[in-house]
Length: 70
Image 1: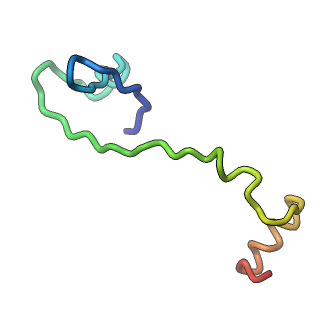
Image 2: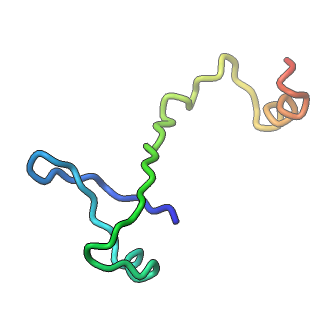
């Protein structure tokens, strides 16, 4: 199950607080060991407007259908 959390500073460490919904769903208990996979959220703001030429949505779909051969 993937869930978005915000990192918080605790002294010299950084931690997360797990939402109650996740704790209830996974039946987590205090002092239980869990495995956490960290995936940093991508910043896609630099991609918007990065196409070298302007094209309509239909033109873009047509290009993709051709296998990016333009």
